Image (spheres, rainbow, N blue to C red):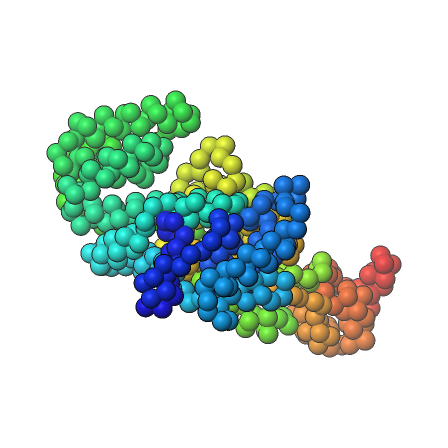
Length: 476
């Protein structure tokens, strides 16, 4: 049996079936952070903030030392050499994903979601087994900001999985079995319109059509009074079909297919000189068992935004459930992402709540997220197995320790020449190799500046390349 960990309930560790004493609450919080990082290095400063928050006035006298003490005691408790290692300013727990109940659960949910349309019976079986791993509130009793955020995220994901289970119940004709749990779920989530939709359908199929219509009217009044909103079109349509006595509602029907967002900007056809970075990016993003984050960084003008979009187009076949693209403030981007995923963003909800809804909406899907010039990207990272993120222009300290950094610099001289030739025309550049080299140098071999200069020259056929050199020199 070996060593195994449980986080879907009270944090526990076992070796060969025997319970391991994990020590004090803060020590357990460090273990939780390392476990959820799935074998990746967690910087010490992240552990400090995750345990005591970002306000350093609330930190203990020697927070780094305390983290070190907790790590030392955990190492002794786990009693397995090489399992918990300190390296490069942080700690890493070298444990297999299959040894953690969370990752087994997420794999089951992902497989069930992938099969939900082709084999709903198998999907239902997988999802039932996955949800059976829960033993209560995730990380119950573990203190700290990190644990609280993880609890919210995991609870939102569990809620999404439960909704899918009941959707499968209805698709398989098991409405009588689903009605009681849907009664409870609808009562506890009065504004969740997908739950309400499933509840209406189950009531109608169980012969309680009047109750279904009464529940719809109650929902309409509740949404109007509490949020100033009308019910979502899918709920209104179902209520109308129930009211009309649509006979097709009595039989099991295929699951609703969620929207497939396709938000990528157009690819740039003349991108040159980034073949090595593109190969590395593809290797990172095609890891199916994780939620990788690829961070592109470099000086202004080096083309991180263009490369991020190019990479996303190159790997979009690995993300059949869609691609999201966002730039700006996290709250606005999260709301837009939720709408693109077929969800209604909660009104005036804080960013952590929006982020939890967003990750729940991604659960079981394979979606690529591209973030460009977002000051605080963390709430927008999917953190869902099967999804991935490409982040351009973010500060290093705003990204998780496990993010793969891909630095960009100026182009090589021959690549800069190639970019000019592609935009201006090979013949014009070939006729004036000296001035062309000067243009590249004046632009610092930066692709954004080169593309701007080349576009100016291409739109002025009466100019020579030397004319462009003079124009650039005059403007410094």
